[in-house]
Amino acid sequence: MFKKIILGLLFLFIFSVTFTWSRDFNQDLGRHIKLAEIILSTRSVPSTNLFSFTNQDYPFFNHHWLSEVIFYVMNALLGFPLLMFLKVLLVMAAVGIGTYTSIKKGGFFVAVFFTTIFVPLLLERSDIRPELFGYVLFSLMLMILLHYPSSKKLLIFLPISLFLWINFHISFVFGVMLAFFLIFKMLIIHKKELFKDKKIIAILITSFIALLINPHGIQGLLYPLSIFQNYGYPIVENQDLLFLHAVTFNPLITYFFLLSPLILFGALILAIKKKYIEALILLLFYFLAFKQIRHMPFFVLTTIPVLSIAYADFLSFLFKRIKKDINIIRTVGYTILLCILPLGIYFFAGNVYSRTFDIQSRFGYHLLEDGKKASDFMLENKIDGNIFNNFDIGGYLIYRLYPQYKVFIDNRPEAYPKDFIQDIYIKLQQDPELQKHIFEKYQIRTVVFAHTDQTPWAETFLIHMYKDTSWRMVYLDRAMVIFTKDKKVEDIRLSAGYFNNLIDTQSDYLYLLRLARIFSLFEQNESFQKAFDKAAELNLQSCTIQKTLYNQQLQNPLLLLRAEQLKKDKWYCF
Image 1 (cartoon, rainbow, N blue to C red):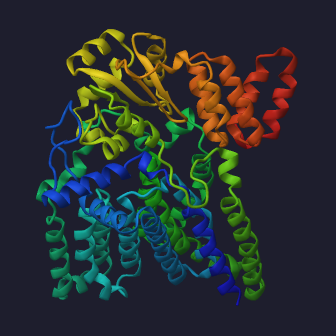
Image 2: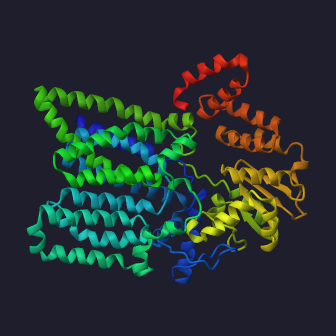
Image 3: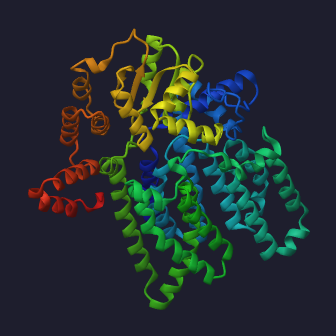
């Protein structure tokens, strides 16, 4: 009875973390759908950068074409709701396989406990991405590895999984790693069985051949080894956690560090119990998540079963020593879970987490398209000339504006030469003379820019563009700004009520904070204060608002004690 209730609560908890507002079109999803449209219409996978007027012939390895086709077909059939359902289904399936493995290998309590405490880290990568398919395949292959040799019948799924995975996403390299761990386990632990069983050898050979069945053949298989050789842009998902912790406020990174002792102690237990493969896998994916935050989901899917194995052994040893009634201990464990899970559901499904830490991915169904109105503005007004855009919004502009407009750059660093990104794209935003030269070279007459870009070069560029009256600022909203040389559109800087209207019509505190930031860059102090005050009225518990108030109070010697008290009361924000 208790187990059924706990499993039901666990399902709701995972759902509360998974079913969140979608920012997917703001990132890569739109470009994926546009690429799939081209793949299906031409019946071939493009091998060059089609969408940019600056580097349209530059080679591009599309390592997620099959995911893109699935996204396109599902979106064409029933629209975004079907894509949202797919995301929830794939994430919950991946976690479900991991939890099932944990229960079988470690026991019910430790499985549910570790699923509960590690699943929130999935919020770091909660979008509709090609790697979602990799999550399920990873959990499946890890289950086969951990259960081997009793999972020998499931080995038939290895070739199928690797064939699909290499065409779904570049994370197939983790499948290759797990396959090598499996071979190592066979050689070291079950050596005689491997050489006697021809079926296993045939499956392993077929698995290798399956990896070659992709649009790029052997080059596609080896691509993970070279992708970062031409990576000129420091995207957040590729940064290590220490760096991100120093430059941004992300509660999930702090949470990861808090959980680290559990990981390291678990690896020690596994090593003591001579479960070296499990210990090595645990440490490997801990290290990968630490080095690049994009690997966090694979770390989570590893820890759920592997830590369950480690701590099941530890708890078994502990219980034998203390010699307590196991039924009492089990009852205490179930009671803990029955307390933690409802609180977790409330924390995430009640949007306490998102509203406190200013996370846009709130619980519920909602599609966010930050570039939609700006794109509509471009199309409706038929703004002429090539456009300059920033890295972040490039994928969405491809989705909405191609082929009417091509982009200067998009959010695929590997699709552009490294020196183009570093010596042209980034530098022109800091050097007005270089900007003038590049804009003349490519006949750029319009700038479409996501002002949510917080890089120092983006801020410098936006300030310069706002002050340069030879450019008309013709559009501004909660996320986008457009400047143009096209004289048929009015300059909104001349409209006294434009900024106030933006504030008055906005009811989401996060969007008001965005407006406050851009007004601050433009030195529109009255508009900044008005937007910030309205945001504070809507959600005073926001950590961003609390930190802003703290910094303002520090500027006044009479309010220093109040500032220190605020920091003490809102310690989780600092």
